[in-house]
Amino acid sequence: MIYKEFIERESRRQRETITLIASENYASKNVMEAVGSIFSNKYAEGYPGKRYYAGNQVVDEVEEWTKDLGLRVFGLKKDEWCVNVQPYSGSPANMAIYLALLSKGDKVMSLKLSHGGHLTHGHKVSFSGKLFDFVHYGVGDDGWFDYDEIAKQAKENKPKLIVTGATAYSRQIDFGKFRQMADEVGAYLLADISHIAGLIAAGLHPNCFDWVDVAMTTTHKTLRGPRGAVIFSRKKLAADIDKAVFPGLQGGPHVNSILGKGVAFEEALTEEFVEYQKKVIENAQFLSSELTDLGLEIVTGGTDNHLLLLDLSDKQYGAGKYQDVLEKIGIVVNKNTIPGEKRSPLDPSGIRLGTPAVTTRGMGRDEMKKIAFLINQAIGGVGQDGFDWGRLEKEVRILSSRFQVFFR
Figure 1 (cartoon, rainbow, N blue to C red):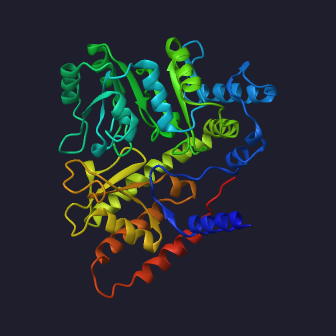
Figure 2: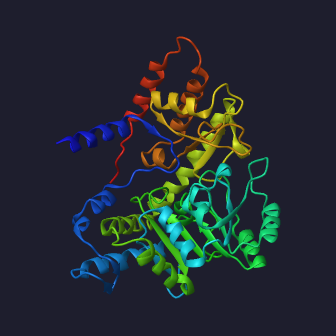
Figure 3: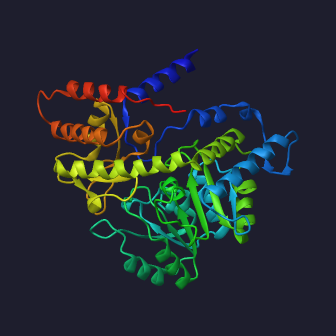
């Protein structure tokens, strides 16, 4: 059957290439077993104890188990916080939060996409930008948040909701300063921690939960779980959040995915997970320093987390060209806008690099040094007649072959 061929081809691609996309990771065998389990067959519209279909006794236990684990992962008290584990992915999860807290046309303030934000943080092509009045803050010329400037914008615009969180910001976020801004204008504060949730769970990034009203995270990035999302909310907001998820946006939840989230949360409570997150950051920082030593420029000069942004604005071509040649030799990255972008978003000046996936495979400092060398060689080879791309491809395959894609 052809589906088996698809699986084999993708398995081979993942085995033979090096994934440096910051939003990708490898789920454990336990997570994949849960997602591919018999729970794929069950329809469970509603919430535990309040389903619209029969036969959900075990499903109710699964959902409550996953919710309890989610709160434990982030050290949250049940009498203060609630969690909804039903969102299909990050985009509808953000939509549910907006629907719960806002009315159509309300003003929201968030990080602009070109400076590291997300489509659902109010971009004009997204539902968020079409339904709500978003104003955007950015980073300074140095690529760092200028909290004084952001606070000034908040006072001028008086949004009902402030969104913090990013997809391409390599420095720690001071959630306390965003809380102060929100309090000064009477706004809710939402943290989209989809990228850094694993780091927060491991105690390696400032905790947002001391400051925010709502937090949303996907579960497939640094949390190393299935594709999906969860929403954490203060108890007083939980009923509105739940209604916005179901019946506001979604029908029956994907119970198999909820089970997978529970497995990922259980794995995140281990000491092994903490050590893994430490290595993710160490690998990102070492990769950044190696690239810098080779003469390449990194936005903000480095990283505090799992990703870094390579600035190629001084190169002959747009980042799309370099993304393509890197994939040609087996290094998978994504082109990305940079602060002060002068090129088209379709072919910008930056490349985003992340270390969660390679760290899951067991790679460390030696491999980061080799990867930096290969990236630099590939970038330098673009436009050179007779450049030996086969040599680089062979080196990538040799390196990749030493590390398993699947774990546990």
